[in-house]
Length: 310
Length: 310
Image (cartoon, each protein chain N blue to C red):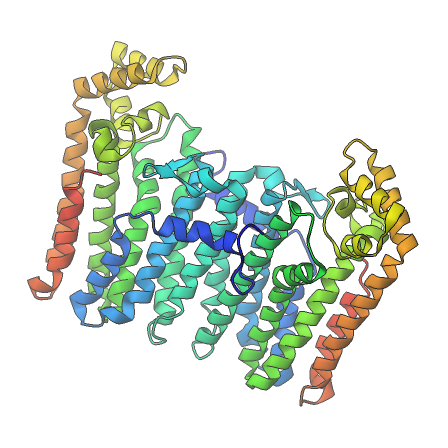
């Protein structure tokens, strides 16, 4: 073996896990767990194992998604798939998912059944979202409501799960949990729609990757689905032709699609939709029957997310 | 979508799960869980969720192993990988692993922390075993003790985990758990060595697949490692040449290796080793301080396994 294994634990299984976990990221999910717990109690230390479990689970999904999306790069660095290959990304990803449950097992026993139940439900929902996303790739008739359902499952559900798991360990009553679920779900939708927007209207420096990736992959993003629904006559034909053209230079294709987006006001539609979901999130947060200072960290977290540039 | 999804749950995610779980198999792991629980109590119904979780987890590992091994066929039928492709096998496998934890969450709360802890430890160990197995493929210096460690982790650990999880829910004391761990681990080693033996000395009708698969893949099985250690001079050269030859007809290669196995008495070595591990398993079982009738189902299960032909 190229490198000594520690106590019989194969180094090559764990190296990709350490690599992916130390690659950075916003740590949004564990922050939601801790902040949600703090809304109701000062019990946050008890929620830390589950908070860590949610981050590890999230990072695990990236390992497997990158195989399925054939993506050798993530955040400007080689992905685990790109660096070690598919088999390694599969198996280290599996070990990582198990590791998230190993963290979860440190949850105080009085909360364990509820936390485990919420974690499992959330994790399965994320898989369903990824499945829908993959199926949409080969379809040309994806409806906006289907797209919203997909991002609800693939992205928003994990933010909601992270938040509720924190709330459970804070001792939140069922009504408050439900309010926080609305908060995190709406925040998650706004977050994903903003991702769509940044891909077309951000800059390469902001994104850490070239803009227009969604356009080149003919991804059914909010922008694309809106454009396809709004475009008529000659413009619709031009959009369809651009999407199908596989020989055009990438910059030309991106510029052509953006021109249509601009003509149709698709950017403003997205901004309106983001503001709508963000407003619903804030409304749900404000409706909680607690001192405003208790929810302030969640509010700031959400606001910071809305103002982000990547 | 080709087929209606039920309440937004994508059918295409769950179909490979149902397919693989209904493909049969010995159901050895859940039987161990229930039989181990019954050694100490009549509490077996409480152990059923965990028993099912272990079978689902085991089947999940087959989905991902078949991708890594590039195996389109399992038990004479297309594998999930062969039937739906790698992406589907990855994602339905992930959902399946989560589903095993969803079953586990039904474990009575008084046993949940211990059962979850044992399950996580076992599951990570199985990943380590698969990692070692993959690494061995590209190595020509695998030692017998490394091979035993690998099958200990890849195969025996899950039988041990299944047994201990049953024992926990039967209320077994730590000493008895330890005895049962030895029982199941030794049984697992005997079981895997017998697999190696059947691959070379079984019949196609028994196996449901052609014999000699391990030989063609130059797998470092117990037989091969023993032969490589025992062969000398001209015979060793012939064995190495057979292993490296990628142009020879498969039947010829298998016949050539079997001839060397026979000359070296490798089959008898394997049979002796199997009997040794099986004997240790029985010894551990006999050392339990319970009425013999309580351990009879485990004894019969082990005996049936030793006499199996596939």
